[in-house]
Image (cartoon, rainbow, N blue to C red):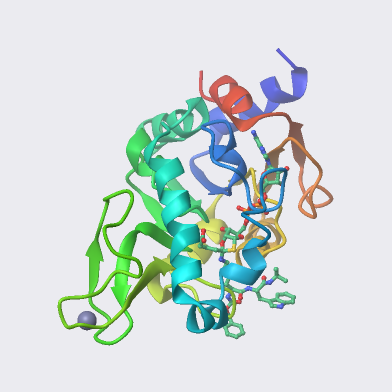
Length: 240
Ligand code: BJW
Ligand code: ZN
């Protein structure tokens, strides 16, 4: 085993409070394209141009087609060994928080329970008129855009650029990063705020920051350990 992985595995074993922040990279090996890597462009659109309230106001059907397309991909894939290793870590550690930017639901399907979904959930629909939320797992959705029982148009229950994160979940995520002895930052380009600031917050609070990513990111410079490689290969070695 790589000696740095062995060292982090030992530190993880000793740590009593652990937090993990995941991004699209952890689901890449399940077959879900990341936002900013290869395959991160849908038709000719980038996430930055579709994941906004303005895009939805201009063309709700287009935005819904993108979400419908992604829901179809997610429905056809399975959690991978990286998701499963984090679910196993939660079983072993009394104090473990998993903060995810992902909306795909693969952490839930892998068995994680103490999960803070800071960017929402692609399987939740929210009415733009009465704000009622419902879970809808049909793929494809029978009607685009979908509508609420009140007649209002529904939107995906996710957080778009320019929108605030869900209040209590974000408070809990910050608290988890502040109280962790170790923060694992897994498969995120760490360019989208405020999530990207959690690594610096944890570091200031005395945590060891461990990055797991196939490429360098802005977190790499602050990380105590940078483990370069696919999350689905590295995480199972950390949680054997
Ligand atoms: C692997 C791998 C493998 C691949 N193994 N690794 C200027 C400066 C600072 C901030 C701002 C600014 N201008 C605007 C802002 C704020 C804005 C922001 O951060 N913008 C930046 C882009 C500049 N943020 C917001 O607007 C947020 N809200 C906010 O700030 O509220 C306060 C406020 C309100 C009102 C006014 C002003 C302020 C909200 C952000 C919401 C982000 N939403 C999305 C869409 C969610 C729904 C959906 O899925 O459709 O969230 S965008 C998209 O990016 C998604 C992701 O969660 C998020 C992060 O992406 P992630 O996960 O990091 O993926 P990638 O693709 O970027 O990276 C993948 C990584 O994996 C790479 O590093 C690969 O190397 C790696 N990888 N394979 C390990 N096998
Ligand atoms: Zn409604």
